[in-house]
Amino acid sequence: MEPIIGIIGGMGPKATLDFYGKLLKNFGATTDQGHPRVLIDSNTKVPDRTTYILNGGQNPLPELVKSAKVLIDGGATILAMPCNTAHYFYTGIVEAIDNESITFIHMIDETGRYLKRNNIDRVLLLATQGTYSTNLYQKALKNHEIEVVVPNESIQNDLMKMIYDLKKGRDRFEKEELVHIIEEARRLELKGIVLGCTELPLIFESAGMSDQAVDATSVLVQATIDEFYKKSMTVKKI
Image (cartoon, rainbow, N blue to C red; front, side):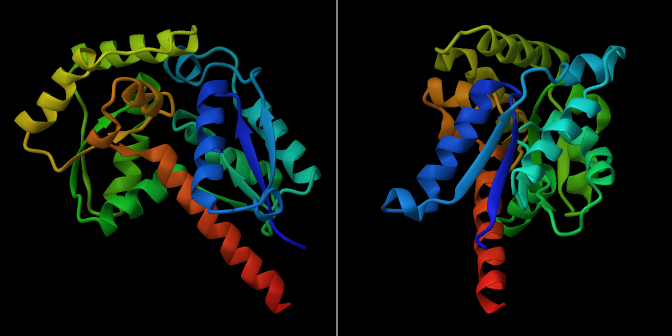
């Protein structure tokens, strides 16, 4: 039986749509039947990840586990979660589903592998304050000998405002809003910029600056496609 991809989505819905769109674009199919079967649980009831990490309150983990189980019950054998901050709960989800036959791709680890392959060893991380506070990227990328630099508080605040503006419905951003971030990376003589929040690729693409940074969403897309073909080969051998 061919692998089925399950997307733990809704964080936010536009980021889920972006991931799925890039999955379709990069899969390379030429017919409807050539595309992989994909299940999407756009669970918009998952509590805000950054709010919980910074201030406590309603824990997102139960809803994330619920989504994972819904997808697995539907036949998914590969899980992808296009939300960087939600990877704070990755281990808890894995422990809850307790199923070694399921491949749950770790977005941040895959980004580290991508940077390593491309000899990018010092990066400016653009992310949510929740991701910054948990050191998710710092811990994962250290395993790949990559140094992570966090922007100053002013840039962090600008990023959070743009991220939540996108969630509120804004869909157009200007190049001028991002230029100072690119200049900060150059000033620090960094080798790259990582978009470590799945709303940020949409913001950078809107401003015509998607070529200025490494898009973790696209990295997750490619890792998902690679895993699909890997599992497909295993099925064919059996």
